[in-house]
Image (cartoon, rainbow, N blue to C red):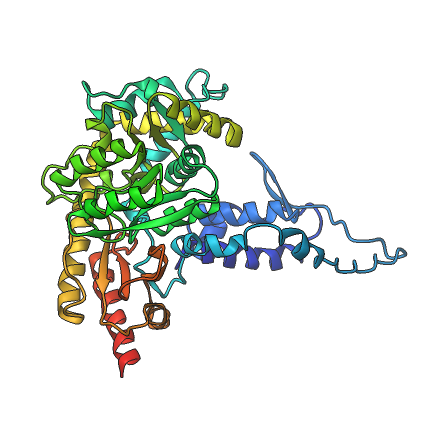
Amino acid sequence: MNERSSVAELADSLRCEVERYPEGRKLPSSRALMERHQVSPVTVSRAIAVLVAEGLVVSRPGAGVFRAAAFAAAPDRPAAPAARPGDLSWQEVALSADSGPRDLLAAPVFATLRVPPPDVIDLNSGYPHASLLPERLLAAALARAGRRPGAWDRPPTDGLTELRGWFARDIGGHAGPISAGDVLITSGGQGGLTVAMRSLAAPGSPVLVESPTYSGILAVVRAAGLRPVPVPVDADGVRTDLLADAFAATRARVFVCQPLFQNPTGAVLSPARREEVLRIARAAGAFVVEDDFARLLVHADAPALPRPLAADDRDGVVVHLRSLTKAASPNLRVGALTARGPALARLRATQVVDSFFVPRPLQEATLELVSDPGWARHLRTLGAELRDRRTAAVAALHRELPGVLDTHRPGGYHLWLRFPDGTDDTALAAAALRAGVQVTPGRPYHAAEPPAPHLRLSYAAADSPAAVVEGIHRLRTAHDRSTA
């Protein structure tokens, strides 16, 4: 059973039971509740916490959990009349001066974060399944971090020096062009993207983006009041001939790209185009924001990875973004922006105004995590698991939906499926959900009208290779029904 539903069901059961207790009556012990309801200690603890938050029970350490004092109205005192619903219609007028409904901008991000019902196979999320994450390492790192001297002191606004140094070495190498002083710790990758867009481009200006590209990039660009301009991607990454044309036509000063295992196509920027991207941007007087989101999601059968663009950049063209979130936990909202010169000062100023700094305990826990020998072992295990899921997904697609998958790379967590012209990918994704599998339509990954129908399929969120295969079978069933 899904743990969230187990907690809710146990809380409902205890709520009914507690309402029959007199004030001060002690509830059964945690062990008794575990045996009676056949649930884990964690489920019992979380269900009790729900009742404590509702004021139904009080927890006394060492003594137990007791029915709380009732706050019902006295018998001779009439109940307060129901409050009249407020009139919120004025807000529509007040918000109409803005650029438009923010929920439309955020819709693709909400879709990425949506958790499907327990009976639906998740081939949508970009976060690996919980069984693939280092929960024990994280718990130990968090416990050690909390005991560090000064762990709850205010951190430097740029981040802990030791953590910034770790990111600098991980991105640029030990003798590379990046030092700890070039690194700004951010609240995860999405937070870093927001800081970069708001810092490097003036409101209303164009920003060049890959096409297709991660829908969260488009959401950040638009939310910052910027105009995304698409530059097509092929199997070797962004088309540099069209990149030069786009800079010339728009006079943009920012290009956002994912050179490694691009989302959603999986493309890796070719060696020749790496040099061209830097040369073209430098000639245009523009920044390249390198979203290096997938470097820790390399598969066990992958060849040696190309260096980040930032590692070969001596002129401060590249603003590099790295996050540990996908490889560690959705809750480890720690990332890093790397830049030099006035650009770093601009990034720093934007972040300090927005959020002051990333909480120190989280930074300390991150340091503990990446310094643990188990971190490297976890990354190797994760790479093997992602390889197995990718292998299962590719084989199943060739069997169930031949022709929809062109190429794939040994890294990242997704596959980009091309369907015949005339296919409504949004309708197909909806039909797949009804058939019991959640996938992502291709439309939100394009800044303009998409040239063809696509689906993005993520194999990281499923709990096993077998679940990936079953999900693809359900997708084929939905496809067959929609084309019948």
